Image (cartoon, rainbow, N blue to C red; front, side, top):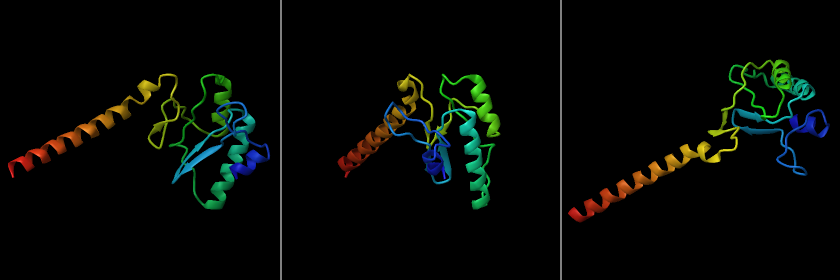
Length: 140
């Protein structure tokens, strides 16, 4: 439905640069990440698509777990209008999708520092395990 709405020009996805294909959504299991230009027209059409989805699937979208993230150059009035049309109450700058931040800003080093730390801890665990196994072999 989202692809059809984009192909018909009812919604506009986002693209990473001029000439690149636009993306309207990423889906994984029971999570969805919707990527749209923040304007009233897109919000109205998205609301309509989501209502059809709820009616046809019998599932209800949990707006308590839903949030919006906007680019820093989106005007505050456009943000409020978009969220009001979709009946969303949360705007989040640190929302995550599949464990990664949706919005990263300019400092990639600070955003991925946790990942570097987790990998380092894993390597240290392997080193310790390897050292213990070597020590046990020497005793036997």
